[in-house]
Amino acid sequence: MKSTEFFPSDFDHHGRLRLPFLFWCLLLLQARTWVLFIIAGSSREQGASLLTLFYPDHDNFWLGLIPGIPAVLAFIFSGRRQQFPRGWRVLRSLLISAQTILLLWQPLLWFTGESVTGIGLMLLMADLFALWWLLTNRRLRACFRADTE
Image 1 (spheres, rainbow, N blue to C red):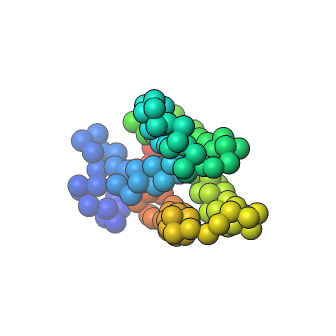
Image 2 (tube, rainbow, N blue to C red; image 1 turned 60 degrees about the vertical axis):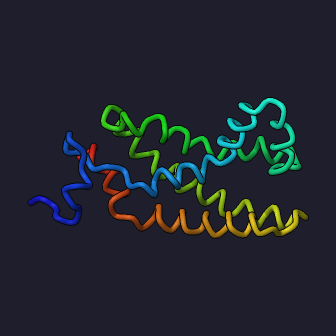
């Protein structure tokens, strides 16, 4: 029996479920340090000052690249998810783990002496929403299962 919980517009011309728009926003949120790294690398003169503005402690910058790795992998493999079904299925749990790390990392920085800022609070709220959305969105869950059934 076919499922009717998704609209026909949720499917691409191959009959596969499309990834939701918020998924791409979530990947950008998780890969925010990678995005900053690319922007800083492309702006030669202001690159160092840009990195110092967002990451005064350069060790936190290098550590910030680690939770973004699953998001970068999701960007790379999203167009070929049918060719790597097992890897794609595992990627969802990696994204959830990375989002949990990002959610816990910001308060940890505050407890170790970094000042609480509006940007930090907004990132914490966005990370909390992203984790909730990753865990509860049925269409996204189906996108990670659809090619394996």
